[in-house]
Structures are given as structure tokens and as C-alpha cells.
Length: 230
Image (cartoon, rainbow, N blue to C red; front, side, top):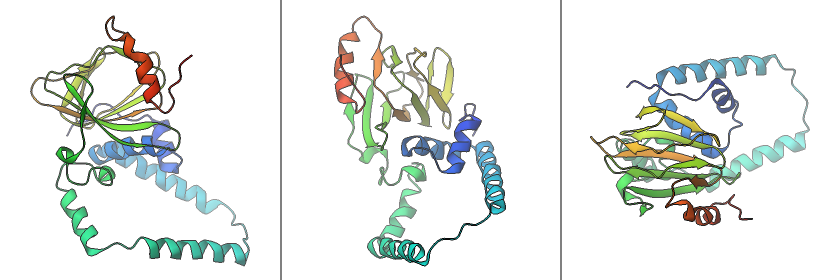
């Protein structure tokens, strides 16, 4: 698989440090499963982080704090045992073509999700909203289907899981990681040979720019955790 678009070094460093929001981490994790170059980069960052950590002088902690931490770990394991059925399910799910980082949301393949139409060409399945209010969803675009012209009130991350789409800046295929900001205006269109499935993260609503779709913008803002009117 040839992957042409990647998270930048700052995003990969944040991911390696474990300080990335869940929504972004899902997209980066899905990309890493498909991109050997970025996997190698994260391994190098992890080694560097481990080296820096090992050079740090340890700080003493009280016995009470250690006992409290170990007690919480024991409680977590006891409350969340992994059964044989769960283990078998994980094996089955790995054959579905869904990245392993999404198995908790997509247990039985893309067709099993609750999709709803957002346009004549596009269906959406919402996965979760992270602690920062960013919305994580899957988009499923018909072959040759087009989105409405839009820009962004915040950042949009798109990770191509299946198929390909194009917009004003190029063609994006399986494995590509695309970051858009408030200055980007585009109209994605799936290629005509197959459907396109993308993992998307929005930290603010889209802003439609077409003459006939601008009236939907207040509805989009109402429907997003960070949406505001007025």
C-alpha cells in the first residue's frame, strides 16, 4: 500500500507522548496500521522518550500512595476480566477490514453500523464524542458521490479507510491522513470505481458555502457539541 499523506512530526510526537485527545489518537492509530514509514517514526520517538525517561532522577513516593495505586489497578482488572468469548470476537473482528483501533466501535464490520443519510450520496455513522467535544464519525460515500462545498469553523481530520476521494488539492487514497483548517474550502468527491469510507473528526461544525446549502449552517451548529449561534 502506498500512502502519500501523513500526520506531521508534531502530531506523531504528541501521539508518542500519550498526550493526544482520543479523537485524534484514533485517526493516527488507524493511519499507523496502514503506514510503515510512520510506524517506524513512532517507534523511534518511543525509544527517544524511553531514553529521556530513564535519564530522569526518580522521586520518592509514600507507601500510602503506592498502595492506593496498586489497589486501583487490582480493582480495574477484577471489574473488567477478558473472557474467552471476547478473545474470539477480537480475532473475528480482525478479519473485517476495520482497523483494530476501531474494533470497540465497529464490532462486526461497517455494514453492522447504524448509518443515516446526510445527503443523497453520503451516509454517516457517529462513533463517539471525546472529552474535548470533538465528534468522531464514519462517512460512507457512494462511488462518484460528492459532498457539499464547505469550509471549517475548526479542524477536520479525515483518515481514508477504504476507497479514495478527491478535492481541489488532490486525490486521497486508503491510508491517507488529511488535516483541514478554517482556511480550507473544498468539495470532496469519491472516485467512481468504488465507495469511499472515511474516519472523520470535527472539533467544530462545518460551514457550508454553497448558495443552496448555507441555510443548513445554523442546524449544523446546533447539532455539534461546540456549536453556537449568535
